[in-house]
Length: 193
Ligand SMILES: Nc1nc2c(ncn2[C@@H]2O[C@H](COP(=O)(O)OP(=O)(O)OP(=O)(O)O)[C@@H](O)[C@H]2O)c(=O)[nH]1
Ligand SMILES: [Mg+2]
Image (cartoon, rainbow, N blue to C red; front, side, top):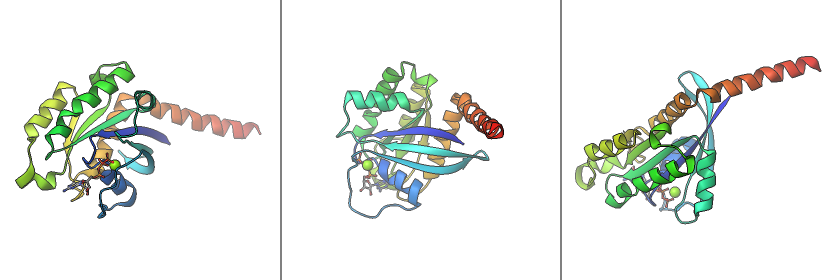
């Protein structure tokens, strides 16, 4: 089974963990805000009729160092960078994550599967400060995909995880081949015993 390692970046409080909890438990967490230390979450998903494993690293800005960031970016294949539509600071920080990813992957952002996500669109009517247009412009500058979601209303949260898997799978077609090959070796080995 193909496994996709995805990192979830974004300023504190933009809603990263709320989307991960939904991926794992299918509900929005109605408890007080609890800043993340750093956690890994795995779940089986069906994307484009194929079963795969998504392994999401929910990051924290507080406990990260340059070294840990270099290691985690090096090991991951796909990246979600999240901001909140009601927080300009979180939007401005997206560029910082794009630069880190590009630096540690030693590639331009257009060669890396990156999805820029605007969260909290349930606050659209009275608290939005970053327009859809601005979000799309930022994404097209780095050749990333763009998606608007609400972790609270659950709108497009699973779509977000599906999209990054599709992007990662088309960028790294060998990932699938590698796993298929492994399976056949296993069958052959069993034959020999
Ligand atoms: N209105 C609204 N609130 C949200 C949404 N998503 C998250 N929140 C709230 O925003 C706060 C922060 O959410 P978290 O999911 O903990 O944010 P985080 O990005 O994981 O934060 P750190 O772990 O500190 O980096 C919580 O109070 C959530 O209830 C959303 O879509 N809409
Ligand atoms: Mg968190």
